[in-house]
Length: 98
Length: 368
Image (cartoon, rainbow over all chains, first blue to last red; front, top):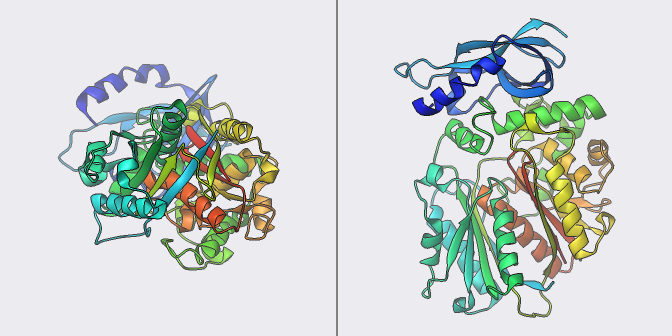
């Protein structure tokens, strides 16, 4: 990701970081784009944080299901190459199964 | 409204190693001018559709590239709206003709997608999602989310999704321009590798090369198909911002506008080319276009109501699924296919439905 864009997105982290939400719907992506090849397979979910909804990746290879309670956490993002700088991104981690 | 489809041409769709982006444009344009039987100098304006030629082919400024194919360098502009680029380019041409700005317009769309790896193509396609709000998404992933919601609410089954793919591959057997000429069984689709649960490889439209062109005119021409109505609508780009994930609101609204303009009802449509980028997309489309009640699209497909000789024939060309999905060309080749069927007197009234992204843009045309 472009460093300037990364910096702008970082400013939104505090709105969601540490908050718990519920999975509205989820899929498990097995074939990823080149940006996220190394992360696959991973969950992609729409999560409801109260009235707000946000699309987020699940941590690691964790499978998320509809109704799961999740917490928004900061995790390393995907890297295309080993030499790329580390990027962090918001993801969700299951805290209670539906 | 009086817009006539004076001429049209679609290239073979598939992995076309011998042809570059410019070759595809030239073939479609030459074919459409020949089909129209007009002097190319009669073309007042050109509208070019292509989703990502910069990413796929390192080529931008397509309006100039295409205008240069003509000796008289007609004014030309490129229109981009993800997978709805073709439909939007048609709309721009129609508005230009109806406003009196031009009398005869060429609309041409092309995409050359196979010169890169599958993972890079997946990345390029995902640029039509909201890149900041949908990080990690892929298009199969976004439609998989829509499929999960539809399944949860309406009990849409694996077999119903597979029935869409089976039907469209069967239809494509009769289309010589189609990318695939191979039949599949329900089991083969249902057991193909998972891409994004619940969508499998054979639920997905392919990566394709191809081009398509139509010449539209405000001049009166007998025995040529007409654009009877069109509609265009938008919804939120990211899925999380949508109110309802069981329907593509943009499709509903675009369809209503096109039916109103054409003064027809959904039950009068005999043939529809709908945007089946994924099997669930066809099920959503046939419900949102008003052919079937909400939640019943999967059952109708499984019951063969959308096959040749069914209640309404859906994607007789093979659709995006089997005819192929050269993105910029797709919305145009749908209308070209309908025009050909009407000229051949197989059908009288057809509908084309072209969607951008996961449903944020929709364009509907009624042709008769």
